Length: 355
Length: 267
Image (cartoon, rainbow over all chains, first blue to last red; front, top):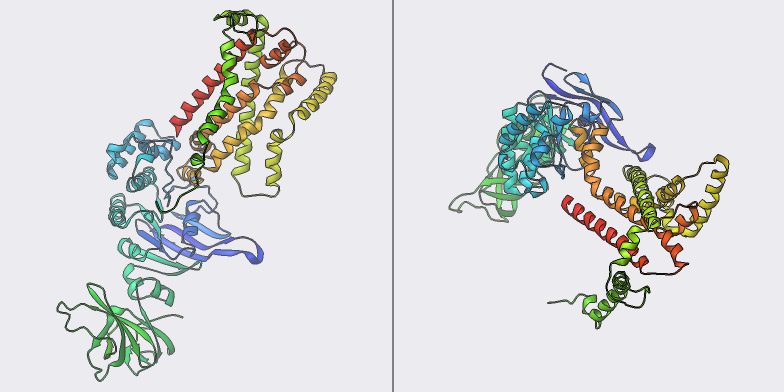
């Protein structure tokens, strides 16, 4: 734990149920989230990301393990005593209060002076551009407006950490894009640590400073979006974030050899023996005829995607891979299904997976 | 239209039946109100318009006395039963399903199912024993009995409201630094209020017109409006009884209208 750590989970375990039927929603997760960063917990539903968020918020207590905030143990502190606020998936706005009263709720409960509450509420209303709607009931607002109120309400007490539980999932695509930018702007302006939970990999890649990928109650990999995308540690991370190809290969520590004899440089510290190699479709290069030093492959299918052409390829050893090539404007160079082509990979594009 | 859905309103004779039902429901009440303005001594023979019976009822000390007592009992019973019912509703909805939950529901709603006369007789015997042992008399026994049988009437609307409430709201309040008491005071209770008001109104009206349990649990000189009217039946029946009933009816209509306006505003 360093001075820069905002939130830390140490060996957090959360089991639901008892005995043999117990389910480990969170299975020995340790993670450090830095001050002022936009951190995303990414994973499919049921992976434990929301459970981890609820442990940090204090809505649940871990079965074992510790949660630290600014170096202080908050594991068993009730939610109202934690300087942490949440933006709920359903927004959970108070239906009997106005927009301004909703935003001021946290400050009121803390017993802040009336003038301070009013000043902060006004500042928050300006921050989320809802000044005109201050005295409306929340039921009279659109989804996007409710989202902004929920954000302003959680930001008003200036929490040390803001938790966001899939806050954009109820919005349509256009509004979601808009709110992604808005969230990023709010995070930069306030400098508050954001912990954002989502199952949407694109959202995670575009917004985050760092991403923690979760699956089956375990943290699979933590890193910047670029690290996660270009250097996935295992099969789950590689396939959950973006499209990718898996190929068996043998390694001698410095060189990877694919089934067809194709050789690629191995990333540093690659173990020797049989390994699984992953290459992103956009790193697969195609030539019209198999040339020496390339892998022969049969084109199985061609999908026109607008900016890209997507080719399904069948390698000689039976492996199916995909290639993604930027469309040629004239369309002349497009390959045909059934054609035999040569496959090469961008040097350095191959990643070796742990499992 | 591709498919025809079944509609009761389209059955032959629907309108006629509906009108008949409403006549049967409201004709007796209209007759009662009309004859309260009867100038003659009879409750059945019209003798011209007059407000005499209202004046007579208004100046009748026994009626005044019974009215004040009825209102006192109803207000106390409504407040007590609503408070108990609110706690019961919170206790039965704000938690995971537990063993014996159905049994608890049945126990809370018991007064709705047990014949009132059974409750009345058992209370008569129990109160008799208590009175003999302690020597304490007074209106408290009737208030206690009314509070008890009003609980399910207050409980049902409150529970319905609680079940429709998003639990995340309470989590959100706790997240925003509200203590459990502040959460109840500033979030749960305000959202629950229409249900609480509905429960209290229902309890009030049910208590106000109760005859059976009151008749068995009251002591001498503790007539409520309904038991007073029942007593009058044994003597000569005059349109004074119509006048009293009409005033009771007016009070109920005013209360229900107030309730309707209150809940509509809150939703």
